Structure formats: C-alpha cells, structure tokens
Length: 290
Image 1: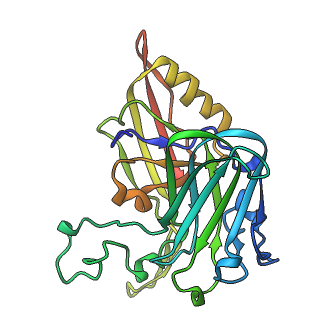
Image 2: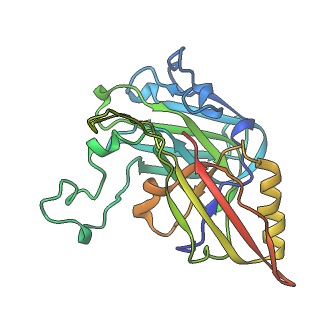
C-alpha cells in the first residue's frame, strides 16, 4: 500500500447487503437495518453493551469483491475493539478472511509531537473530551487483497459493557480503489464552517454552533488514461453529487486514519484535461457527509 496514493471507496456495495442482528435483537427504534442506508442521523443501536448483544451480520444475494470497510459514526470508547469475519457464502460456512481485535480508536498522535504532560502522551489516542466532539467518526479497514464476499459477521466488544449500547450510523462496504499516483502538491483540505452568529450593537456575539463538514480539493496530475476514464470518470457518472463513498487520503499514515478518513460526496470538481496521449489530469472535490 502506497503511503500517499489515496484510497477511494468506489464499487460501493453497502446498499445491496441486508443487515441483521447476530445475537439479541437491536433497539426497535434504531434497528440494525439502518446500518445499510442513509441518512446518517438514522442510526442503529444495540440493546446493551454486553457481548451477546453487540453482533451484526450483513448478507448479499450474490458474492461481491470487498477490499474496504468502515464503521461510520460509531460511539466506540477508547479501548473498545471489533472483529470482522468474511465469508464467501450466504450461510457463513466458507471463511475467506478475518480482522480480529482491532481498536475503534487507534493511535492518532506520534509521541515525539507531544509534551510529557499531555493527556495523550502515554496512550497516543484521542482523549475522551475530543472523541465526544466527533459527530460521525469513521474507522476504516483496508484489506491487503480484495476477497469475494457474500456474508460479513461483525462482533463489537466493550472494554466496559456498563458504558451502554453501541451506536453506528452506517457500516460501509466497498471494493475500493487506490489511485496509482499521489495527488498534486496543490491538494487543499479543511472545514466548511456552518456556524452562524448574531451580533449586538455593543459588539457581543451569540453563536449557533453547527457541525462543519470536511472538504478536499485537488487533482491527480498525470493519471493513465485507462484509470482516469474507467475508474474516475465513470465514478462521476455513477455517484453524481448525491451518492456517498469513503475517502482515505493518506493510507500510509495510520495516525491520520480516524482524523481524515471521511464518508464524502462529490462537489463539482471541474473538467478533466488531456495531458499527453496516454495521461489525463483528473480534478476532484469532496465534501464530508454529516
């Protein structure tokens, strides 16, 4: 896996999987079926935080190639973990891969960047107060090699079950595509602020703080024609401005995965350019889904 070449969640399969509880029933007002559909505010919630209640299964009518998965908008705590088991058949008799004991919140700080007194110096993880500010945190899982999958079983583990049930806004399933080159050096990213304010005559301001989506804008300056047209151009037609997909911009920097991986939609990127007879310049513009 290249450190700099972005992974884009193309060939998205989430909508064709049917989600069901793998143990006790989920909250009837927040059913497990919500994990496969938009909008993100319509979440799924387990009945409790006990292990017998925190399992779900996703099944497809036909096998599909899967290389990218993600918990979108989860409320996993600092030491909570998950297992993902992949099966080639509908009835889960043919395992083809597994990811076991992974943490919802991996390390996000390099210790060399923190003073000894910092609250995250020893763990390297986001502290609870910062995790609480994340409205829809994303925990991606990128498989080294895609596999043909028809069923997925996910087990979530509370380090302290008394914290309460798991909540997840979406469980994303895709093949995913890692582009063959890194973005051009003019890549820009940040937040589109939506917070509004009212200012009194004396200068005092009252604020209505709103979630701010992450935004990305850049270009792939020298992408081979086949990749530019058969992957990137086709994706614009398929996803338009309304269909969400995952974007993992710096896959080699594990410390940035939970900070920068987002479920995004296209915004108008502009037009492609022919650079040479065999290469195109491909612009992209993404905005995070709230």
